Image (cartoon, rainbow, N blue to C red; front, side, top):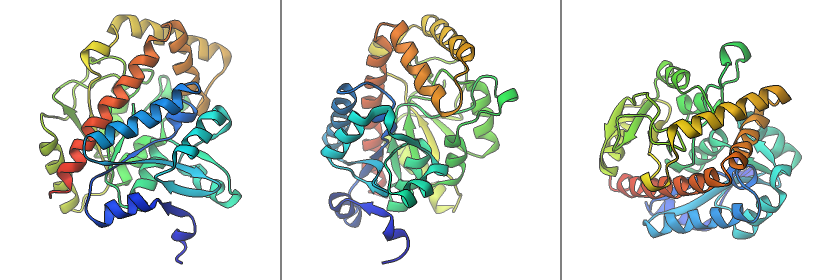
Length: 307
């Protein structure tokens, strides 16, 4: 056993798929523990896996369980994370070695899910929205580790854009500085999570999964490090009014500042507050955009296996 095998555990079904060049899509686990309440979180996580399978790929939900970096956790483990909820550590890159050493559980963020995906050999990862540069970061330096991971780790992340609670302009500037390609699926405008509009442009529009797979394959063939960000707008029927959600986010951010909420507690606080203000409409939008991203990621993964 090498040192990595001491900690990394890829489920037999995922290992079998990878060994036989069948498409695999990884899924994060913070959406289970920190994204929504139980039992909706477990129901959603299992439904996302069903969506991936229906599109011809194998789903691999990722988490740290008892100090093991697991790629492809079981329904029982998903339920365990869902019931434990906010009691599970929200695990990013910095947390992984401590969780492994202590034998503890962790729900993986975008950054940590990218790391585990790469360790297992999975190239495509579907999530809701990526972290980014927080509002006021010029003072607080609050910048998500997700962005640095995109610059370093060779995994394609399919999302509905950066979360609209962030400073989207500065997030795009950071990604440009780090050389991360930002693609828009059938759009030239960066989607803003709950809405299809942001006022900011992506680097390139691509209209088919085949195009996106070809671009990622070219990046790999060229030996360019880092990942690729594919932004996929929330379906029109589930999108929220841009002005309404913008005002809601402003109110939630002001409340967070007043209460001194910051760091890794900020995003869960804001998402929960926005859900309360919108009477649950934001949660429904969140769930639907995750399903939509899982469909696109699966189709891209299928195309990558043809390369």
